[in-house]
Structures are given as C-alpha cells and as structure tokens.
Image 1: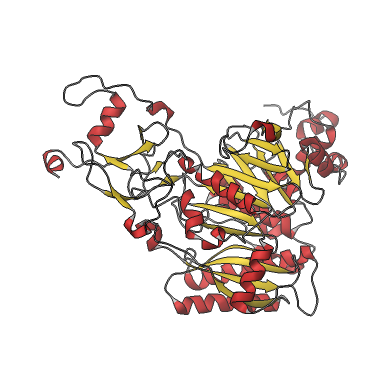
Image 2: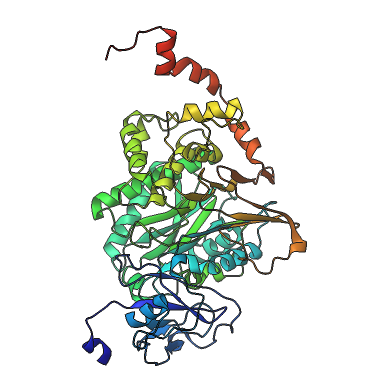
Length: 568
C-alpha cells in the first residue's frame, strides 16, 4: 500500500511458479479486457499430494517480500505451493532483466517474453474395442489436468476460462443413479438419453418453467420423460467469478418408449429437435444468455463442463469421482478464451466437438449459414426443418457456432460425421496432384454448399459411433497420437499428458498431419486410415459427374463458345 501511494496506480500482473523448476514465469495476456489480467498456468505432478485437510482450511498466504503483494490465494493443482502476485515493478524487472533501481543485471531465468503464446488444450482417450473402464476416465482427467497451462484464468487463479470432459454414456452408472433418484429401471442402452442441463441459479420459477418446456416438447415428439436428477457438485474451490454465475445443474432422463418406437438415428434426431426448440423458446422467454443451456442431450454421450479450471472439473462434478463411473471414450478441453468472455456455457467440449485454435472466417461462415437457411430442407424434418434454425448465433463462440453447424449437418441430413467434418474443414484440394479425382470432385462439389471454416484449427469430434480429430490445411495446431498394445488410443495437443505410458506399451506413435483426419470406428473396432475414409465418403455419389453437368466455369465457357473479348 505504501508503494502504491508513491507511484501512479498500475495494474498487477500475475506471476506463476513453474512447479518443475520453481522459476518465475509471467502472464501473457496483458491485452485482454477481462476482470484482471489473465494468465495460463504451468503444471506439475512432481510435488506433494493434496492435503487431507478440509478445502476451507487449505488456503495459503503468499510469502511477504518487498516485491510481493499481500494476497491470499487458493490452493492450486495438487500441491501446497501458492501462486504469487507481483507488482508491475517486478514484472518490468523480469522483462528487462535489470533491477529497476540500481540497473544491475538480474540472474538469468527461463522467462522469455517472445515465447508468450497461448492456445487451448484438446485431448481424447478411447478404447478401440469399446471396453468401458475406469482407466479411460482417470487417463482423461490426468490428461486434462496436465494441460492446465493451456487454459486461462482470471485475476483470481480459481476462476478459470472453462474446462470440461465429454464421455461415452456411462451406462452402468446411469442405471444405478436412475434407480436411486427416480426409482426406475432404464431401458437397454441406446433406448434412453441423459442430458446435463444448466438452469439460471436460485430461481425456482424459471427452473420450473424451463423444465416444463423440455418436458412438453419431449412428449410432443413421442418420447417419455422419466424424471430429473440434481447433479451433485462441490463448489468450495471456485473463484468468485464462476460462483457469481454458477448455474443449477440437473440431469433429465428420456426414454424411447413411446407408442411408436424410433430407430436409433431418428431417436437422436428427435432429441436434437427438442434441444433446439427448447433453447429457442427459453431464449424468447428469458433472453439469449439467461443461463439456461443444454450441455448435451443424446443417448450416446454426456458432457460435464463449466467455467472451471482443468483440475476443478473432477472436483466439482462428483459424478466423475464415483468409481462406478466408467466409459469407453472421452474428450477433454482446457479453454483459453481469445474472442469471447468466459462463461459456463461457452466451456468445451460442446455437444460433438472441442476445438483448439480460432475460426478466422467466422463472420462469413455465419452469414452464409444464415442466408442459406431459407433453402435448407431435410427429408426427415420436411416442412419443420425451420425448427432447427438458425444454426449460428452471435451469442456463441467460434467453436460454439462450428459445433452447431456440425450437429445440424450430421443429424438433420443423411451425412455421416466424418463427411460433415470433411465438408467444413477440407484439405487443400485445388492444384493438389496427390489427391485422387474422386476426392477432388467431392471437395469441388461441396465447396458450392459449404465454405471452409478456416482457422488455425484442430478439432476433435465424436458422436458415439466415431471419435476422431482433424487438423486444418494450414497445420498450425499440431497434435500427436498413440495407440497402445492393449488397444487404447490417446491423442493430445502435446506429449507427456499420460506420464505412466511407457514406450514398450506403444504400438503406433504418430502426429496429426495438415488436412488429415484421425478416425476411430467403434463398430469395426479399428482406426480407419485417412485415405480410406475419405475415398469411401467421396465415392458414395458421382460428384465428378455432378460437377461436370452442373457447374459452369466462366473462363472455359467463353473459350468453348468463342465469345469475343470485350472491346475495352
């Protein structure tokens, strides 16, 4: 306080301790207009395990030095080392490597301002043989926590930009919870759905009205609402920012047991319709960002996410810590929000994907999707196709808009998920002599229907049948994947996320290449090579004939018709 009286007020920058080397690192988010200066955090597992003391007592005060602000900070990660808040004076010392008063050269550290770069952390874990196990859940959590340094936090390090995990439906766990909470026996797997829903906090009237909307729409589509289950959470480790906007989270159980039983694909389509219509109706009643949000509503997967730090996800959602919570697939995401403010609903994974990078063509993508909305038609939805629109929104992040369009393409049409991804993130096909004519024709034809969602972008995706990842043609968000001898697949934004993995246990080790797709098909229980899946998709229709018959190239047309050039 004495120092602040002597100098003009300057913002504090947040310095974190790299827990591997105990060397100071600085924040790289100085230009961000959020509450306080944001930072990403370094991560380690080499420190003492978490204290057994109650969370409320596990608060450590930063050591008092001449350059350290007197602040109490919550315990970070799984150790007992606090984060340190430094004055602007100390930040400038680290940047210039000189003492502000004496001008003396400071000892060299590993901090380098030129290396201040950030992006999200994305990963997936899956069993090729679709074997549900606790190991998939534990490895996914380990992977997520080890990518904490890729996620952003606010001025309070317990306020994260967002993190989450998407799992294949934990069937055994859900059956137990449905019996305990609702007293019902769930139908066979694939014939029921569970959705995690956010409701505006501490508003029982709105909670009742939003539930009524979902229940009414579900019954109208011939499905049965079995009941609601409050999702148990522990918010004692959250910072003030996520606490202020923390939603009430409940699970809805829906059964495909109406008078006319739906096929699995049609069941998914009707669930999709219910979600879209419920969100539109709630937005009309409460406003576009009211806090009502359906994280997922499907028979195949379920998403647990929020405005959390990576290490808070499994601590906050007590379901994930339950030993009976087992699954065969998981997507994880640690968010560093670059173009939208953090919020509970903007955390990832979303419904079908998670994303590392930015969609730099977003404005054009949204405009084109909106403009073609009047021409969209679905054989299944018919005259009710408008119920699924609009597909994009200014209230969603770039990833949220991408996910919304991907879900529309994969569920409202007859396209498979890999085909929808190929349309949205095409490889470099023009003047590419390494591509077959079949694939070139596919990309050329679909370029008239869907413009590329270009970024730098790495997208991991799943619908329960497939899980995979693709890298855009620029290749600026690399990832690596491993296939183990016990038929587990691990893909991540970086290596070292599963430290227990030994080289002797690895069967395949490779990187995700620009424009390529990594794909696991759980029905065939194998990794489908990029060329095979793309040739298979491109061969389903005579795209080459369609292009030749229907597309007019003006330059070629003027040559063929011998039209004289303009006289000017």
